[in-house]
Image 1 (cartoon, one colour):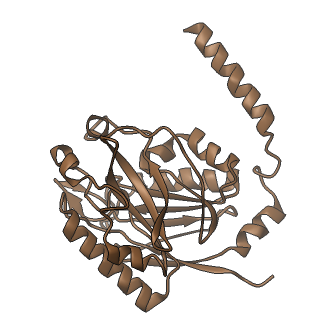
Image 2 (cartoon, helix red, strand yellow):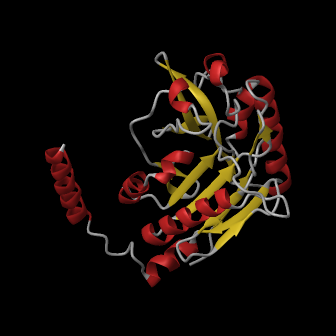
Image 3 (cartoon, one colour):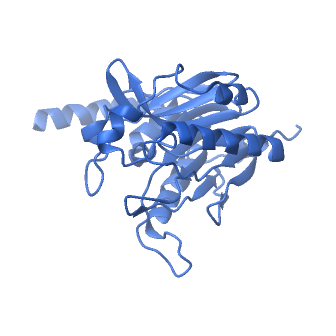
Length: 286
C-alpha cells in the first residue's frame, strides 16, 4: 500500500486579548504563509486563539457567531487546508468555549468545551456555558474528534470518542506553565499532558495531536508546546515557540492495528454493563 502523508502545521499562536479583528488578521497571514511555503493539509491553532484566554468581562463582547462572523478570507483559505480555531462561540444567547474546524469553505465541526475549570486562577465556569455532547467528523485524516484542554483530563470523553470510531484526537489547550527548567521551558505541565496522551494513544489505538498557546497574558505564561503521539508510542514535539510542521503517515495507523494492542479486543458491551452497574451502586449509596 502506498504511503499517505498528511502534513500538519501546529501553531503556538499568541492572541491579543479581546481583539478578534486583529487576531483574525494575524491568523489569516499565518495560514497564508503555511500554505504557500509548506503546502499543509491541516493547520492547528490552540484553544481560544481568536479571542485570547483570560477574557472575563470581555467574554460577551468578543464572542463570535458562526459562520457569519468568520472572515471570508479564512473560509476561502480552508478550501486548501483544514483549519482548527478556538473561539468564544455565541449561540442562542449563550457563550461557549468552542473549537471549530473549517474545510472546503464551511464549518464542518464544532466542539463546545464540556468541563470548564473553575479553580486556582481558572474562572471559565463563571463566563461560559458548558457543552454537553461530543461528535465525530470526517476530515483530512479520517475519523477525528476534538477535546478542549480540561476535557482531555476526563478519560470517559476520550473513551467515548474511541468507541465512536475516532482514529485522531486533537487537543487544543491554554495550559499555564508550571515549573520552568534551566532552558526556560515548562516542565511539569507539559509532562502531565505527554503522559496522558501517551496513555490514550496506546490504549485506544489513536493518534493524538496537542497544541498549547504561546506567550503570556495577564502575567500568566504559556509554553506554546506542540506534540504528536502515535499508538506505537512514538512521539514528536516542538522545541520552540515557532510553527511546527509534522508529516503524519496514515499507514502507521494500519501498522499499529496489525501489531495489535489493548485497543484491539475492547468489549464495549461488557464495559457498558459495568458502567451501568457502578452508576446504580453509586446512586443507591447516595
